[in-house]
Image 1 (tube, rainbow, N blue to C red):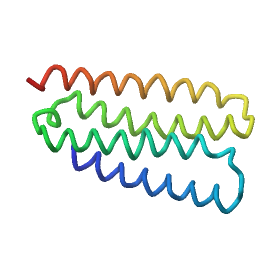
Image 2: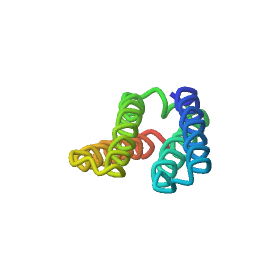
Image 3: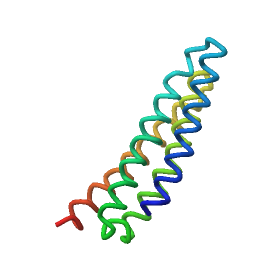
Image 4: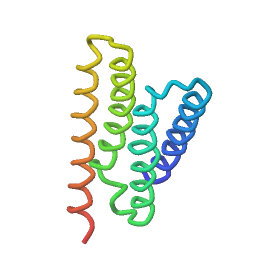
Length: 120
């Protein structure tokens, strides 16, 4: 799981840089929260989790690690799309933001349980 997290973190990093480029060229800073969430929750968080999984391989072979990985990588795009929708005043976007945050928080809780259970 560690290598998979690091690979996807690199994708989120590139996506965040792309958003930074779009923001800089367009001068439309209303997209800044999207770029920030991609960098923090995608690049930084998944990168650190990937490093933890590489450093402590016993954490990466659990079902909790797999479930966390998939929940994180499904919920983050849902959250990002919801934030984009809210940015463009799409009425239903608020529901997607809530779904994204709830799933993301659930995934992070699974990660925490995995660390507390397996790291001894």
